[in-house]
Amino acid sequence: MASLTAVSQTRSLYIKPRLLSPPLQFRSFFLPTRGFRGVSSRMPRKLVVVSATTAEKPSKRYPGESKGFVEEMRFVAMKLHTRDQAKEGEKEVKEPEERAVTKWDPSVQGYIKFLVDSKLVYDTLENIVQQPPHPSYAEFRNTGLERSASLAKDLEWFKEQGYTIPEPSSPGLNYAQYLKELSVNDPQAFICHFYNIYFAHSAGGRMIGKKVAEQLLNKKELEFYKWDGDIKQLLQNVRDKLNKVAEEWTREEKDHCLEETEKSFKLSGEILRLILS
Image (cartoon, rainbow, N blue to C red):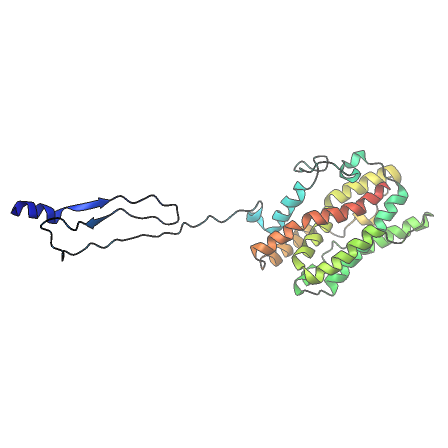
């Protein structure tokens, strides 16, 4: 009996843990047996140790994020182009202006309407940053990308050629009013439009200008498509400023800015469509 008691005192019952879903993980452990004949009820119990670990979620990476927020905006913008417009484009062609520029059939009067409405939009942007409702906008004063003065010269040239210069139309008026509202109430969305308007004109906008000049203006290059200084450096300077401003934003604010890109394309597209009217 003595030997049986000794065996009972050293025996433990192994409890296999149930599998639990992360983030809680339990280690295997032993519990002392109780109720066996010859085992003292005052035998010390072994502690049950439960290890709870919270698995850290890997932070989500956004396309272009490692290069700065402007690269994120560029990535989203390129996806909203059609394949006719850009190699990275994914959007299906639905509107005439979404086709490749080589397939356009512009008119002089339509082009003048486009310039008039564009000038109103650039006037609005430049006025906002000169008297900014948010301090961060002051970063974008006198960047060298401003287009309002150049457009005024171009419209004066058309007038000298005998063309009638119309008043701004609904696409330009609507966009200008929208920009004014955003600039006060939604700075992240406003910056999205600021970026897309200026950067799109420096790329695809120049292709459009060249096409129209070849077809309608005897290859005359308008002031709208000329910059004082190296355009690549001017763009880089603004890119740096945009990245600097975005560093102060939360991830949610950045995402909100990116989500505004589609609206920017829609409103700009309505003005662009005037060329074909």
